[in-house]
Amino acid sequence: MSGPNLVYFDLETQKSAAEVGGWHNKRAMKMSLGVTYSTARGTYEIYREDEVHHLLQELQRADRVIGYNVIDFDFEVLAPYSVFDLSQVPVLDLMQDVEKTIGMRVGLDAIAEQTLGCGKTADGMEALKWWKEGKLQPIAEYCCYDVKATRLVHEFGAEYGCVFYFSKKTQRREKVPVIW
Image (cartoon, rainbow, N blue to C red; front, side):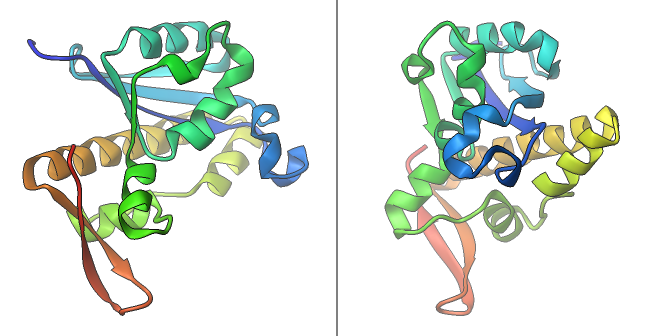
């Protein structure tokens, strides 16, 4: 496949914010599983914590990493595993981009539901429960689905120049212009 290698990325954690003393301690949450989708490969890749160095290599080699809240969350969780500065990775954080436009944070579920007509299959708290139960398969499926939702939202925004969300303020579906 020609063109840049876009790597869509998401991860789940082993610990909650409450378990590590708050959101300011994201680096202590530890990765349970990370998932990528590479446009060069055309497939998903699932990484366990003991394979995190392979995940980091893929992110470092990508022409662009695309994620949802990837800068403020996923990269913070990954930072203790990395020998290189993750801020040097070319990244498009869809959440930050939407936030700059509308002035507030909107979750992936809200954007995917209004843009694509499908929401998330679970949430991070369920993934934490599965981790504690030793159930990696449901975590992998959930994380793959989030990567797919991120990819589809990005592709929609790139093609149509906008995405949508439901505004609690106006009580209607609102358009968010994007340049992706």
